[in-house]
Image (cartoon, rainbow, N blue to C red; front, side, top):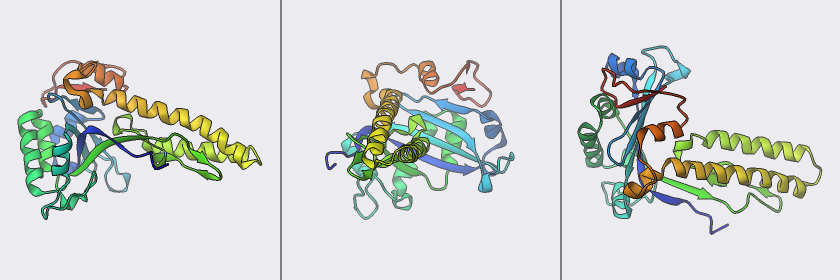
Length: 250
């Protein structure tokens, strides 16, 4: 399927993980068991506490993770993924090859554009990762005796947090389809019919969640409360907590 290739969404994501012990205690306490959303103009940052080594979730032994979505046109994208030697790496670059000047500029932007406590997390990341946000849809998932699944078939933007689940469900559906029929062609046709629809809906939902980042001023809505609810938050806390975060989803 040579026509099937990733489509750039016109924004990138900076990611980072910081050891909880390296973060001021009040920051980890402010995050708690929440996903915290921050909305610089035209951008989005999410931060949360994640397990430490060995899946350790004891306070003080965890890590603090962030992902910061930022718009980037074609020219900016090429610059972001070009290393110190002038080598362009397409839409993926090994983290150690990200130019130090770009990392310094990103952290300076964090200090200027983010709530102070969120900026403090970004500032402390030792080695950020940089990802061009793309999505991809396959026209089919079976061809003869070949089946494709997971990211080989559909790539959804990170907003849906569904990549691992999608791959697992594809694998389960394929196994079930093969177990239910001795006719491999029929089994693969059943698998494809089920998972093509699933993949298309997942990609469509991730595009919906990222629309305000992709389209900027032309986006359907940039209302933070609507965006947080679309992410699946059952209720919101409207008060601004002492840490200075703008909104928190419980």
